[in-house]
Amino acid sequence: MPVTITEYLRPDSLKEALALLAEDPGKNIAVAGGVSIVLSGAPRRVRAIDLQNVGLNEIASTKDELCLGAMATLDDIIHSPAATKVASGLLPTALRTAASEPIRRLITVGGNIVQCYYWATLPPLLLALDAKIHLRTSEHRRTLKATEFFAQPPMRLMEKGELVTDVTIPLKPSRRAAFEKMAKTSNDYALIHVVVSYVDQRGKMSDPRVVVAACTSLPTRVREAEEFLEGKTVDLNTAMEAGQIASHHVKLRGDFRASADYRRRVLRVMVQRALLKAADKQTIS
Amino acid sequence: MKLHVRINGEARELEIAPGAVLGDVLRQLGLTGTKMGCREGHCGSCMVLVNGKPMNSCLLLAAKVEGAEITTIEGLGDVRNPHPIQEAFVEAGAVQCGFCTPGMIISTKALLDNEPHPSLERVREALSGNLCRCTGYAKIFDAVRIAEHKLAKASGNGKSTRRPHRP
Image (cartoon, rainbow over all chains, first blue to last red; front, top):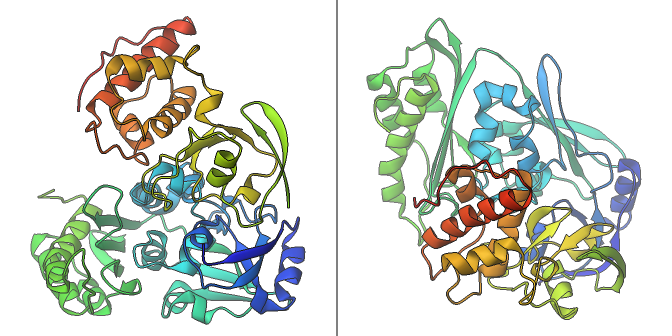
């Protein structure tokens, strides 16, 4: 294990955790689910600050928004009645495709979005749902739009001693959405993630989002496809054209799992399918 | 650092390295039924129950289970007194090399404790974190069905009429 944990602390409040993280910030590591700490991390000696008991585990909803505590796990979201209110159950449907059931009990909201591995499932969903990410240090708080948070690897944007405390997602009853994952086996790392969403205005798309991930180094909104879709009705031709636009305006990564060219061909079809699925007009599966 | 846990029903105070993972701690206690296969959460041979829920003990920092109840394969049964799920795996021929079996049985235990009569889809989902490179899973799914019947019979509400079936 590259990271050597020299001391393991379990603060009982967020205030205490932030104060500990502010002390000599370079030597601390915040522990959420702990998965990425076990698997990787720079080779250094660190003091671990476990966030299990600092009150960030809750998932709650108001009339206007869903709030996911940073320590809520993917499994907590899947089983949360509050979380099903977002875009007809998009979150549980999509998160069920992430890793395996036992690992979904370890992966937290905070860990998943801060590490933002290219295959992570939550970041593209948050982009497509116009989420806001709330951060805190011992000194100040700030809120970032998902587009700002994921515009660079989030770790680079976060200050020393800063934590994600929670994520809020607006609840708009008329927002429709769909998610597609392509991987070589059901729980392998994704080769491509596509999330689309739009506000349904009497059959026409308003405020559409087309988000592509896993085949890009960061989850990406494809503005060109979104502009094309604004005001249009979803039908096969529109969906095909949007897929074509999306696949040509994204810088795709290739690796030993699949080449960029292969991903471009598949991405086109996945965007098309996701749009038809969101509109309940699937003609192919 | 000190770690206080209950392992297979017994309260333990352990001295652990702050960065140790649970699977290594358990194996150092002699509980070698928990295997460390891939050490990256893919194979599931390290599966243990933490407060009744299956988790990959290779990815779980031991320090995170302070105060928890841990169940390993040794806590279910042994050769002389096997658990009905262990019997079911033998009866179905679901064990070949056997390396994945403790993890498979632990995942099955958690599933059937919570859902006595799961659908095939739920069985597949619950075992999605356990890889078997020998059997091809058909006999493992059969074993889950046999275990379901055994446990239902033992608890006196053996209503399930589902027969073991293959995907």
